[in-house]
Image (tube, rainbow, N blue to C red; front, side):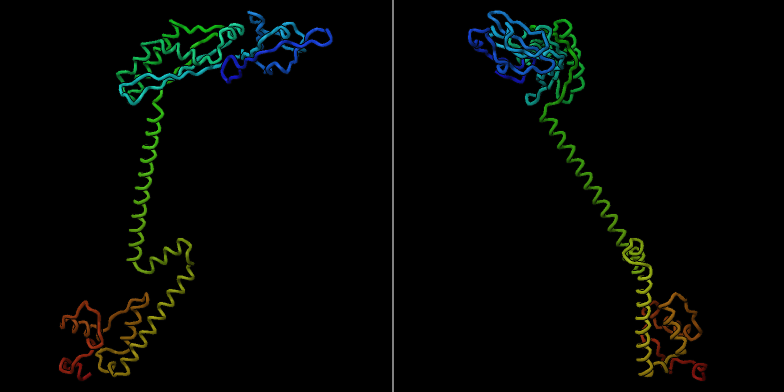
Amino acid sequence: MSTTFWPLLTERTLGPAKSRLLLFARRDVAELPRQEPGTALVFTVGDRYEVLHERRHLTGREDIVVEAVAVSLVDVRERFVPVDILIPSASAADDFRIRVVFRCQVTDPEAVVRDGLTDISVSLGDYLRRDRRLESLGATSSIDDLNEVRESVTAQVKAYCTVHPPRLSGVEVVFSTVEVSKPTGLVEHASRMRDEQWRQLEQRLRRSFEADDAGWIADLIRSGPEALEALAISRGDITAGQAADRAYQVTEEKQRKLAEVLALLQKDGHLDRLRVDADILVDAFTDSITPRRATAGPELVKVDRERERRGLAGKPARTEDLVLDEDELDDDDIER
């Protein structure tokens, strides 16, 4: 029978050793388990167990090998063996998980084989469960009281292992550490809750940033095309030269439309009826589409006063608003 437990790793039954031509009997060494470093072969001979202490290659003619009816492989190196047990909490749905680690060393391989100590963790688990006080420590505590329960359990396990140390055949066992953890389901639930909180926080931050960014862009749009072009230049979407070319194109388009308006006014004779010099009017229109600020002459001042008298101040100018009836002209204007 082969197992993966500790310290008894493998057990095999052996048949009679074969003899040839009335010579001494010899066993095929392939019948024996492979002896790894840190292990010992224990042979069952009759009703006794004998360990082969010699570290050498076997020939199969050794008396103990020939006479054995079974052989076992025992791990004799020091090992740290974890043992997990559960103790109840105040909630019927949850238990406290306790992990106690023992430092173990095989001192008598023959005793290990005799008692069939294949899985020492089972024996140590039974040993811990015999401590009734340990099982009652979490009965009045909830999972949220993990820190308090951890302190009580640690103190109790240490005391129990000191007063009643574990005794197993052929193995020296010494208490090493103890851990108290939450149930696996509760840990997974807490992890999901944490991840969801992180996701919602990240989503709120992203939405807040998007709202701020949208408000900033809206302000730029309200500021006009110049602000948007400045943003495009800063982000590298367009160059300063491209922005300048576009500005010149807009200015030229405005000038072209202005020329068309003035040509229409000239064609219909409206320019002759205006109380302002045509050159001054052109300059005023030109200044409105260029950075230079126009200085109003006396003729434009009169037009503004007349618009104010008519209640048109602050409203867009129209061609008919610039035409004054002859009755509205004073004597100086008629003479002029």
